[in-house]
Amino acid sequence: MTSVNNGRTLTSQDTAPNRTLKASWEGTDTLSTPSTPSKYLKSPKPQNSITIAVSSRVLFNQDKEQQIYEQKGLEDYLKYQIDHETEPFSPGPAFPFVKALEAVNTRLRELYPDSEELFDVVLMTNNHAHVGLRLINTINHHKLFIERFCMTGGNSLIGYLKAYHTNLYLSADPLKVREALEEGIAAATMFNPSEKRSEVSETQLRVAFDGDAVLFSDESECIMKAHGLDKFFEHEKAHEDTLLDHGPLKGFLESLGKLQKKFYAKGLRMDCPIRTYLVTARSAASSGTRALKTLRSWGLETDEALFLAGAPKGPMLEKIRPHIFFDDQMFHVEGAAEMGTVAAHVPYGVSQKLPQKKPIEENAKD
Image 1 (spheres, one colour):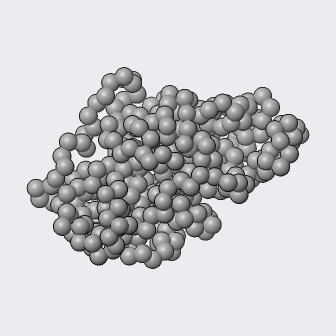
Image 2 (cartoon, one colour):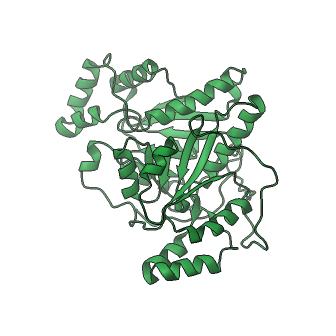
Image 3 (cartoon, rainbow, N blue to C red):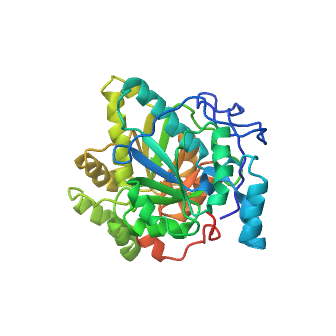
């Protein structure tokens, strides 16, 4: 995929799509002294929370540092990080997503002050601990609430992801993502838009999912790859009352739905700070029934369902402006990124066995 731009014009309300507002975290490139949060909030216990693990490279832009690591090696990389530890990193592709998670937590704490059913963001990186101070300074500079760090110094993250009961892991390294998925952990490789990120809501978390091989298993995709589109339609029609098996991100949608119901219980369905979308290449009439019946059987729903019948997803996502869009096919991930959407690749299912573009260089310091 084309190298992506880390521009920082990220947020404003969707009600003013033609206005470019300067986000509250922009404008300062150095820290005179390391900052500290002005208000202490208690982190929820991992077993009670919805844990979102993010790598340092998707949360912050570390392209320059990665280049130093690749060209000059580990020691020069560590020296550079220490020498610049009072200079905050700029936001990366996961930054607006994390800010939206925090906005949801704020609403939840207002409604349920004693509840630990909250999002808990964990910085999960294989970086060396020497880099930790710069990461802490950057998090405080941007006023993020991230109390849990895991810096493994190059060792595998899997055991730590399991220990934190991780509900979703976002990384820039496709190998780490594949490893997590193989261990049953919902995971995706994040991408920056190729030009400029679309402005996204600061008060409502918006998450868009593909269906097959993301929320659902790849059963139906296997039929299409092996026998073609006509046989796929025949199969779906014949099996519309047969439920699809779950895919790798079904559990994450379930977690989002659990929090949504807490807002619905307070009469806030129409003012819920979480909104979910199904954006699928399926057509509604010939193959949409099975998808919707499967979601209903799971006790799940998405706020909106878009059946595109093979049409490009990018224009619809540009209208939705999600904080993140999950898809198993790089074709759709790239199409979304080209139109300004932060997209994440879920390397799961039969499509991964076909030749695809290499998404990014392997990232040794994620």
